[in-house]
Length: 398
Figure 1: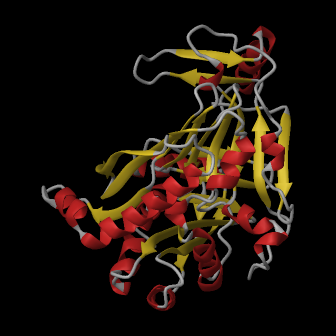
Figure 2 (figure 1 turned 60 degrees about the vertical axis):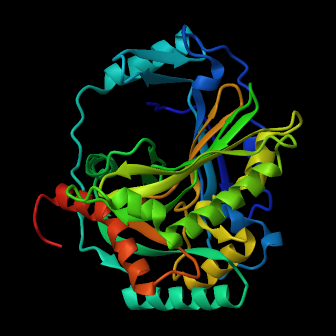
Figure 3 (figure 1 turned 120 degrees about the horizontal axis):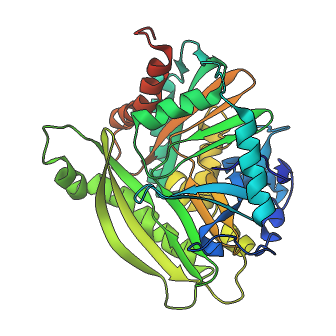
């Protein structure tokens, strides 16, 4: 838990090399001031890389949408933070030095009790399902023509929003217990993520680089004991998953020591609120000369939310989706004090900006995809957000 940052890295859309500022961070110049936690365990810079960072570089070609004024990279440095071990119940204040730790505690004590403004959320509107279905049909045509093997397409849910975004994020966390996430409050917007997908974890001290792509979804029903087996056996879901695993193997291979890329624990069915997902672990050891910027250039944006081949899939997404994605399907997390990187995929993620909240849900399209089933999958994935909205409202209204 971190607050009161001292420094900020903010890269606006249009910067031809959006990752350069992060690549210059390097290891922290100060030691962590607590026992039991090493530099690689402790976040120093916290923030996100928007999906739109891909389109920031003019060399990528001209995107369909203009994206003025929105950051594509936003990270803040926190000289001290609270670290909580939920299994042991222990907690620490971790920071640059004793002064930084004491300053954080003093700031918190000075806040006293806080009266939150309960969010007011208007009627939720969603992209027309028939238009999303037509986009899927067009994507299937591209697949049939051999342009692409898989492409991820998403819909957007939107509502007016007033109040404290933290209240909605807390409701999202209660609606869906997931292992990863982020609440990031910037001056003009907030990012509310409750994600289950690990994008990359790069331990710079051991040079271990790990990604855990998720692809493949089925509804989880309490009385349906065979759902996970059906998901693992479904040829369409297997194809969708295998293509992305191959893509991530290729991405990691760009920075890996020769022969070190491997798939560990493939096609594992993991249970989440209302859903089962297929998850695999792909890992490697990076070359000694690899930098943080090299890792991002090789892997971003996440393959599980783009498609394969990645560049052509990104072009098709830009053509077929009716809105720029912004943060959604980018990455969020932290640079640790050793100079390593821990990022989650920005799915199950809402953004609050300019009096509106936006939420997206999508799925991978392959040759065997059924358009109606794919539209229904987006509705299923959006249920967590809609349940959270209902919880905040405390009513049964839409």
